[in-house]
Image (cartoon, rainbow, N blue to C red; front, side, top):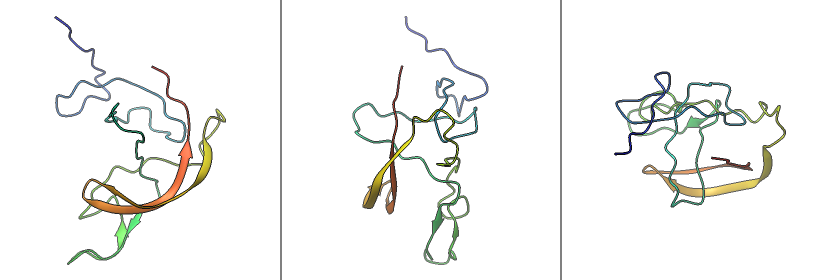
Length: 109
């Protein structure tokens, strides 16, 4: 029987996770959902903001109603593996339509 190893510092709600370093993210205890059927993974920038949404005023994506975990910063690129490759517009993810900057890096497992 296969039992995935968990990292107590990154375990989230009983989901098996593993520790990893992501260029651009300083938080070493962040956790990620990796979808190997997808071509991209979205990380929310530390300065992410949202427009007015119903009764919620314009503000940080970390606040209601989005409550996102923000941790990415393109300035944290000591490895040199993070490369800006352009912009994206109208990406549909998690029920939202977003725009931003695209970066490319390598993923080694």
